[in-house]
Image 1 (cartoon, one colour):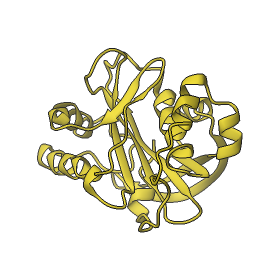
Image 2 (cartoon, one colour; image 1 turned 90 degrees about the vertical axis):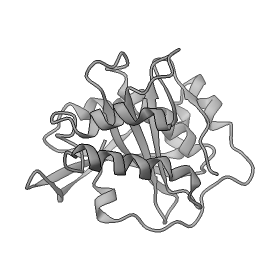
Image 3 (spheres, one colour; image 1 turned 120 degrees about the vertical axis):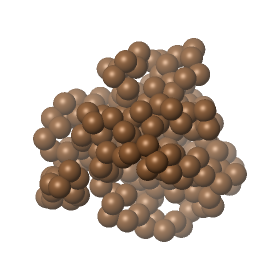
Length: 216
């Protein structure tokens, strides 16, 4: 089983999903506003439950390519959002995905920290060289989140995915390991230095277009 350790930051921490996280997961994916800018359409309850079961199975896949983690407040073991990492086959690349926080989450305003914790794990134990992310071009507030995570603007991908019956442009950002590591915080450096022997990048199936389009 390929489970990630808990990743702790100053304002939030990340852990693997558990069966008890179904209620907040379902709340996120059936919410009209929270799903507005995601790369997938709003789900009904049954669809959300099926998706949750697939996410729970991620640690049991080998090699593991998808990592969807629960975002939790400091000192509290309750899920208030999600953050994901999708590892690609070529070039030791990965994509940050699915940053969503519940409206009443006490960690709101610190979503970039979830991305930074996963980037530290990606550039450290997973041995990645390049991590990128994207957001719908009309979701302008995400630019601040991307830059705060240490990602730099790259390009606009025209009409990359379709939701709610419309095609959407995506603005992309990326970070390279040497540059990002140089500006890591002490907590992030602890994660970077926690590489486990034998756990590194492996050949994995290339993601589908739909998976690539799931933006933060």
